[in-house]
Every structure is written in C-alpha cells, then in structure tokens.
Image (cartoon, rainbow, N blue to C red):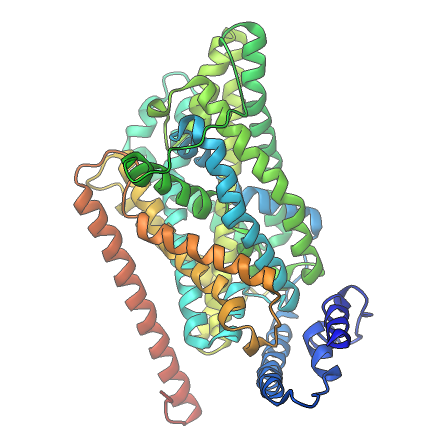
Length: 543
C-alpha cells in the first residue's frame, strides 16, 4: 500500500516534470494515465481492480474527446499569457457592487467575508486548478461537465453559463450610466433617463461586438487596461479613509473591525438578512475563476498558467474586497449605501470632504470604474460567444455557431447573437420597475443560473471522478462538498431581495419563472440538437 501511495504522489506531480510532446498536449501522458499504467492489482484487491477498470475505460473516452477538442482549438491564436490571465481574473472577479452589498452587514462584514473565503472561495480555487490541470480545454466547465457526466449535463451547464452572462451583460449599461452620473456636475439626471440609458447601451454593445470580433489580440489589451484601472480605483478607495482621517474630515477609522453575529434561533436578522448577503458575497463576489478557463484554447500553456493566475490573483482579490468594504462603511451607514454604484458614491463624498480641488479627482477615478466595466463586458462577450461554438463542435447546435471570421478566427455569428440578446434583455428590464429593483432582479436571476453551474462543478470531484480517471484526494472532496453546500444555500436564499421592492412575492415569482422557463428552453434545444445530429448520421436517437 505504501508503494501504491508513492506511485500516486509521483503521478500527481508528473505534469511538472513531463517533457513537451512534439505532437502537443493531447499526446502527453496525463498524471492519471501514468497512474493507471503503473497499476498492478494485488491479491485480495479484486474489488479495487474493477474500479480501476471502470476508471481506465472512462479515461480512454476522455482522452479521445480531449484530442478532438484540441484539434479543433489548434486554429486559435494563443494570445493570453500569465499577466493577461491574472489581470483578466481580477477584472472578472472583483465586481464593484459587492463592497456595497457587504457593507449592508455593518461591522460584521469582515466575519462574513472570511466565512465566504473559507467555505467557498478557497474551495473554488482548488477545484478549478485541479480540473483545469487535468483538462485544459477550450470551453472550460462545459468540457469538464460533459466528460465528467454526459453531453446533456455539459450542455445545460453551458446554457446556464450563457444565460447568466447575458443577464449580467444586460445590466452593465445601467451600471455604467449610473457611474457616469456621478462624474459630471449636474449629471445625475442620466441615471433616471431611460432614453439616455437605451441610446448609451446600444452604442456600448455595438462597440463591444466589434472589438470581440477582432479577437483577443485586441481584447486582451482592453482587459488589461480594465485590470489596471480597477487596481487604481481600489487603491484610491482604500487610501481615502486614511487620508480623510489624517485631514480630520472623519473622526475615526477601523478597517479590521471584527464583530461576530449572535447565532441563535431568536436572531431573525441573521436568517433574513445576514445569511442571505453572505451567500451573495460567496457566490456573487467570490466567483469567476472557472470562467476564464473557457478561453483555455486561446491561452499559452493553459494547464499551468490558468492555475497560476488563480494563485496570484486570489489573495489580491480578497484584500480588495475586505478593505474596500471597510472604506464604504467609513463614510456611510449600512442603510445609506447605494447598491448599484457604491464606489462612486464613496469617492464623491470622500473627495468632496477634502475640498474643491480634491473633488475634481473623483471624476477621473469614477471614469476608471467605467473602464473596468467596459473591460468586464468584453470578457463576458468574448467567453460567452465560445460556449455555443464548442456546443456546435459536438453537433448540439447548428454549425452556424461554429463559423469563424476569415481573418481573426473568432466565432463572429455567436458574438453578434450574444450582443443582440443582451441588449434586448437590458432594455426590457427597465420597463415597470425602479432602477435599483431592476438591477437586483437582473443580478439575482443571473446568480441562480450561475449557482446551478457551480452545483455541477463541485459535483465532478464528488460524483464523477472515476469517469474522468481522477482519484480525488480527501481534501478536494471536502472542498467540493463545502462549495456545493454554499451553492445550494445561495439558490435557496436568492429569492429574498436585500432592497425594498414593490412586491416581494412578484419579485420571487419572476425569478422562479425565469429559471424554469430558460432551463426548459435549454433542455429543448439540447434534444433538438440530438435529433438533428441523429438524422444527419442516419441513426436512431438513443434515450
């Protein structure tokens, strides 16, 4: 047994020592392949050998699929290096609204940030690094779910990711306009003008579609610029309370105030508010590492660099959220926080207290926030357009989605479709509800779809490890179980909004209806694709 343990440890570390194969990644032995090659059943281990045989059969299928996907990905330009991936992770994960959401918890924000980091953020990083190292394929989680479970699960994961990104993209126009309204004196009217938001959203989506069509050769510079601007914005946000304290414009500032909530059945606020916000901090703020893996086929050394980008970005992101939330609470009480644009709100007040000259700086900083939001939309559009493409590779969607631009090798049809649908949903969301309720509705609906994909992600090491030839170590299974439970908690609590709405019942009904209708539509698309592929092949459709 000790010898087998040593062989397992050697196999798991083999990626770092295997030489590059002249025919590429698909032909290089995986750690789990070498482990199976070295396996020799001993007396009394017949039951284990059956499991190993099942693992070997599943692994052979995984190898065939990997080779096919990598062959299709060979046409893509490998544009994303380690620095590009790190900045993309920061832009994608660090949403500017979440410091406002966490600020609703007051002095308990640090406790719940740490709880979210331990129970979800670190497990997510561990699972993504592990799965990406084994399967660094274009399509990311779609490929992992397809190979771990089956085509239907993979398709529904891609569908929910696709719908999630569409819903989030549809709200970016509103968020950008709200930030711009803080930038210009007398510009607050923009955030309340639906006509202005409509025109601005059309122009923004058109520009992003054009940029995404050009590919990551241009897009990575948009993402990198957004990452740098976001880091500068948070630097200003984090430094502002210290400067204000030194100038005497605020009486005190304690960035690491730690308050523990009362855990008792009599604490109604804990269940109605605190746990609700905690679940959103975990599955809203501390998410996104797996999304960048969608672009593995367009990254340099994806098995190594995507994991490294997670390790580098993770501690930076955690500090940005914790200190950023403390800065919000230095200037506003929890009930005063603007949930749409909390950073712009804080910078406007903080720099305003420092005098007229300092107040002029706020416009530049808020414009940096806008730059990050534009970069975020570019990432969503770029990655989201790849999901229909990889589903088309599997004949689950028409070949129309797989057609590439003749010069830039980007899925131009898929890019255009994503842009048009996101714009249409964004404009429809402004009808009949207030601005903050519209933002919360979009965020919650998108969050449900995203949470469903995380249920599958964390289920892979728990329930599908043998199918992909993976021996999930105990620590990975514990991490996966923690992430899975938090994902389910988010789904259960997300129907309760944290802002006042006209009708809470109607709000919840909209979320449930959106979730059910879109997933039924996704299942229908899958079965249509299967039938179309079966007719083309002249074979009966299997159950």
